Every structure is written in C-alpha cells, then in structure tokens.
Length: 96
Image 1: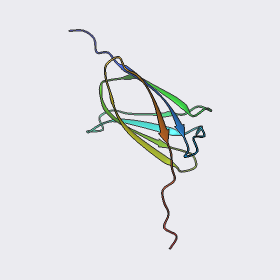
Image 2: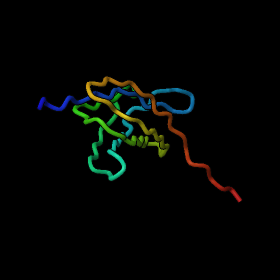
Image 3: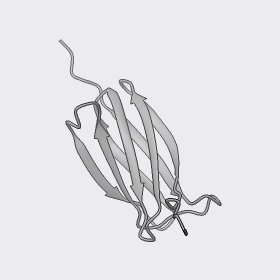
Image 4: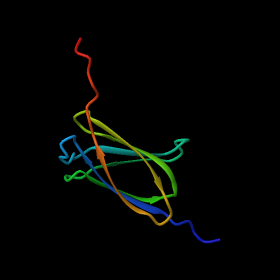
C-alpha cells in the first residue's frame, strides 16, 4: 500500500465588506466526530494555510478579535490544494 496523500488548504478571512481580518483564529475540525482539530491565526492580510490534511469532511470556524464569526464546511480529497474565503459577520442582537 502507498502512503496517504495529504492536502493543503489556503484561505482568507474577510469581513462582510471583504476587508481582510488580521489575527482571526481559524479552527478546522474533521467532521462528523470532531476527531482532529487544528487552530491557526491569520496574518496581516487575513491569510492562513493548513498543511497535511487527510481526505474527508471538515468544518472551519473563524473568530475575529472584534467578535465576528464565519463558518464553512468542505470536503478535502487526496493531493488537493484548495483556496477558500471565510466571510465573518456579527451575530444579530435583539434590541427590544
């Protein structure tokens, strides 16, 4: 049997106006069991990169320093190099 071929995920975290979000925490969890969780921070351009991902379904959550969140679900295949954009939004507040 050959070695397992892993994938690379590159991405950007932006706000609703597509401005880059520096210092956002990006958490990736292999679903459905939440088996492998990795966290990285975005750079000054809002970019992040994750290496050595095994094929499967993943959930990405981005949390900004300002409290906005973004979510993305995706499937990774062997030898994949994927680019994603996560748009963050603030949770709606009830002002009543």
